[in-house]
Image 1 (cartoon, rainbow, N blue to C red):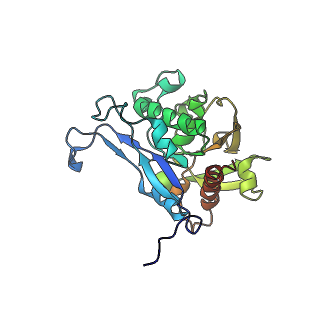
Image 2: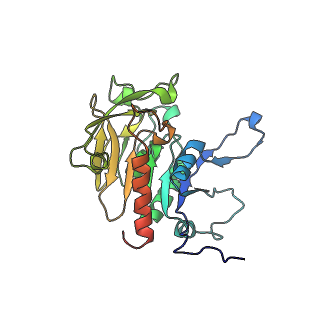
Image 3: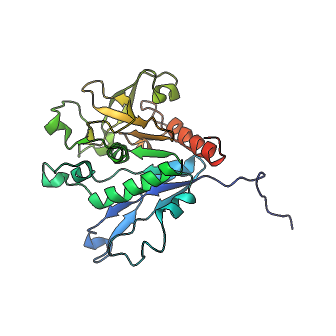
Length: 272
């Protein structure tokens, strides 16, 4: 019998961690009575997998969990992974940027915030790349000391459509990629592109060492940010994972994921 292939004949795929979405109150029809759920959205996992990497959900440990924090450290999870994708989902809690909810419906998920901020910083400390999607971009900004608009129509009075419940991920609008920015370079000098839009919150005050990579030209809403520090962290306000790769009208999603995975590969090889 032939011996199994080993490196460098077959290098192991990149292992990408996905932050968990949390469901604290599960509808009875799902069959999880008095339980909490942690889950990932299928399309984001498939976006990672389609580019040759493995996707792993990273669970959080709540105060009532049976597993003790002494049993496993966040450091241990991150050590086994090569990069982090912060999923979209519930609003970031205003408490996480030293504010109060303007309405009860904008209270967000403080439990998830604390979990993802700890997770994010552990990846940064270990020098591994981070990609934030929608809420993930907002969380990235907040983790570095920035703030958010809790509701764009209320606080900015913008006429641009950034979210519409009836259409959900079918809402699109243009974004301007900043001259000299990483994203514009990634997309071959593209100045204006079209993206999907599913958010009512957005970056207000930039976090420390954050730079703007894209804005909505109609109202100036920040649509992408990047950390200028020694590591790699970028967040986009749109949902590339929801896009049909064949949808020629939208900014292609694959260059962003490939660039993220290339960075993970470089850093795993010690070339970061």
